[in-house]
Image 1 (spheres, helix red, strand yellow):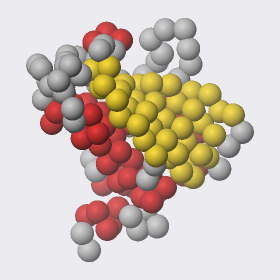
Image 2: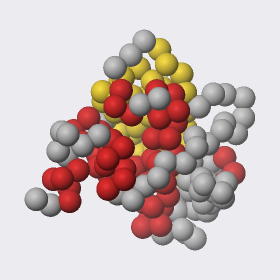
Image 3: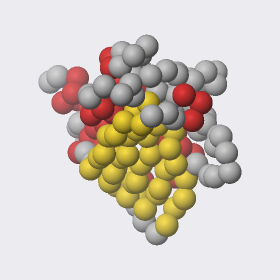
Length: 163
């Protein structure tokens, strides 16, 4: 059995999968302006945009396709995904309540001629599939932006169906 197959076994919880990936969830990053990190409406959890913020508060910044490589930005999108999962955990108390990741909107602070936005946002998408298995497969948009708050490299928001 491969590592990927082991992660998708039904007896593994999202917490087991995070541990297998060597990921310790940070505290959910606080909002940076006048909004909340999430809103629950019925069986949907709407997650505000998160960025590539390290546990010590450091944010990854720069233009992807100029001073930041697509490969580095993929890692930033993965880190952003970890922060989104931390918000899910804080909001729900148990990641086992995630029934399905429905949709992601990924924004890349891109140089004007950068064209590989989907590969960057795959950093978050790949993580969600590794952590939530089939329930992590989602619809998605990946777009380029002229700038993002604080010049962060990526910002990603999510809609999640919950039990």
